[in-house]
Image: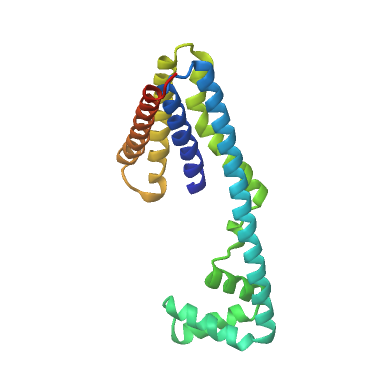
Length: 220
């Protein structure tokens, strides 16, 4: 859910601010459309590459840590067992219960390795991702968020009308994404959606007037 919210929200906010700024700067509908498409593609590619490199680096670190941990289990088993007992003890287990749990885990090499990886490094196999899948998802989500700010300029001739429609569509998207955050946070979806909507539209207004200021201060 976090990745979906961040990816779509980035596309919504950055593209809406971009088109708002260039509309304020006096560009034609075609020029705004080209700018929006270029910005969306650049953002999509940048997000995909960044996510690929980050996920790949994280996976390489995880693999190296797990290989080192596997060696420790071979050559320093007792120390690893004591370390496991310390970590589980810090979580509230004690006495015979602690000793029993540690012995059960220690009796299975795979369980011991996975437990150490999870407790020491936060490595859980079910949460690991393919760098390619992560890159595709990140880029696609950004592009999905960018579309509401681009499509109106491909349909309408008036830049003002297109910007209003883009603001409405992006506003709906921003409110929805903000509300969806509450699935995890358990806070008010109305307040969360309104907060996200307000920040996005405020950014759009600022970008628009920056464009107006730029257009009025630069000689033709």
